[in-house]
Image (tube, rainbow, N blue to C red; front, top):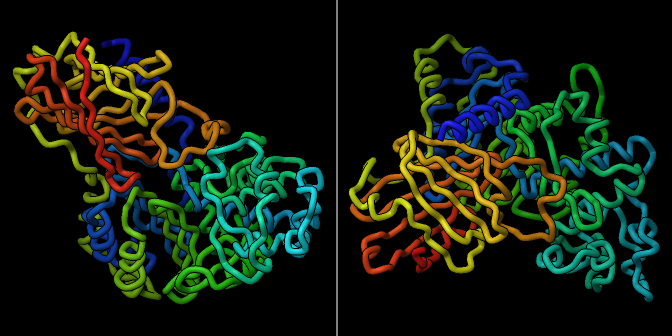
Length: 501
């Protein structure tokens, strides 16, 4: 047990040392014309929203952080996968390449991939341009399973029939952004992440960033960016400042303007170059599955970063921002408010729901020392065992590949430990973990309800969470049942009968 705790402490020290937090300037909300009460109401409403686990939120006004919260067990030091918010960073990479005359909007896509073209190239495929990819108007019907079926993504994409004239019909497609990432790599000789590190991230002192790679060695582009929330806030602030950061023009104002403007009739209000128009005037956003947002509001000089796992369509969250928070802002500084002390207290106290139940149960005597084998499952767990520990309980997970790790579980508190392997993921691209750095961390808590054990696991530097109930009521008869749901497949509930060893 001491070895586990020592390893945990060392891993946390390394994680904090690598984290890039508290680099952006902070301010009291009132100094920037933001009522602390408005932030409290926004944070409380989001935290209580049904079907939603908030992982982080940062609010900036006039270039300063005025409010932020990370419900435990999440924290500012952890990276978070961004899903389709990644697309906006690809657009920035394309813009920088255009600024450097490496690329043009009207360049033909086919010309970059002569060796990957089908034997017969249609007129529509020949006419498809970089602009058509940026605006999601490639003319190709999206094939979301393509990334999970084969390894030649570029060739497969180019072999698809172009059913509409390029530039005419909006069809949201992550593989289109993958093609943009491949083009950036083609014209720069560097992967999109490496190019952005050189041109954008290093000047902004963003070093804790990774990106998934395809089997072809290309950053996935349309998803897969793994980055800390404060680093995203930096990107959002640079975006708000029209590509400028600390006196240096990292992306041209012209590109930021084009990227942020409506370029196609996508969504409710229009689509730019890998960005979304919003209901609020001048607001534009990067938008990823399960609620990953970088929101830029020039009219209010506001940047908002939100990471979460939510089953809503995002409209309730954005509605709170458009209709409640932004209208409450003042153009002038506000007098100090007693609400600021309450805001600080709340920001430090938010936490995700802990499992129901008590700290102990007499049935633990029948559970300790036994291994529970689980039928084939999406988590690749083969067996699980439990024992008492200093934190409360210890759960040892053995995977189908024979590796194992021990997860501490806290009672009325969260215990975090590095896992051996990969967290659950809502999508399944081939070799998706390539390009990402470990370790991944899981935070666990438990509660006993009679003869059942409730366990919650949050993968805190990813996005996914698992909610388990182990029913030991018939353990004497050799029957144990595991019920598990997750926060990324609309709480799909699965039940397994476990074999006792």
